Image 1 (cartoon, rainbow, N blue to C red):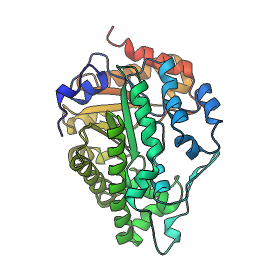
Image 2 (image 1 turned 60 degrees about the vertical axis):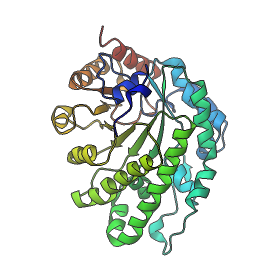
Image 3 (image 1 turned 180 degrees about the vertical axis):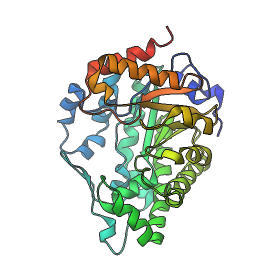
Image 4 (image 1 turned 90 degrees about the vertical axis):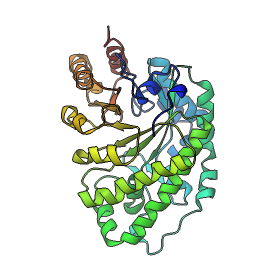
Length: 350
């Protein structure tokens, strides 16, 4: 879907998503609101659980605004989690300190039952209130990004009950194909409705996080990534959602070109391992690419960080580019190094 240039205005991120190459690329950072900021840790302590935090619009909106007070970023992304979808569908979701999310594994159960999608979306009303608050509070030049996990990534957590090695979820896709395919279809609809609600509340861009695209055979990638993602984007457009969509299939490797060509996304997020010089020949020149600085450089700072920024800028210099990391910011990153990164990108056309 081509982005209507009349809707772009002066927002730098939207201009690049419409196919324009800027001398200084827009920049935002995955997980730019998070534990590396001391002010985030202070407000996180106000909620009993992580999901309580995600469902508290005042706290979630404040988390989004915090990095914007420190850094000259071109976009803000909703503070939430990809696992609000299974939570709303009636699955128990917990976040264990130092271990990550835990769910009752579907693969341990014989009969899979889920909440009605319409009711699930109603349960997620606090998330959309957060988006609405942000749409009114953000500075005019800043683009608001909504997001969701991809059907396969969310299904992986639901199938095996946690992240980490995905062997069990992949095996389950072979052992229980009809049930897994039905789960993916359910998640396509629930995710489309979730993103539609974010768009209606004020999100200007939508990102799909395909966090577990790595390690898949070609046939399984087609079945659990390409097919559901294509269906998701088509469903979004059928629902009347016109906002541009960024797809981020982390770890997709040689599957990246097919993802770009077949899913219908408007822009492609690249992980740290992607050799941009080789990939860009297989991706339409007008398609914006996002990425892909190594997050570890924000732990180091200094010359390694500046060298990394220069290499990323050079790799994308001839096409529409959104500067970002190749994965989310780590808790060990230092705020002063994030400031150094943003300053280096903003000075790149000087």
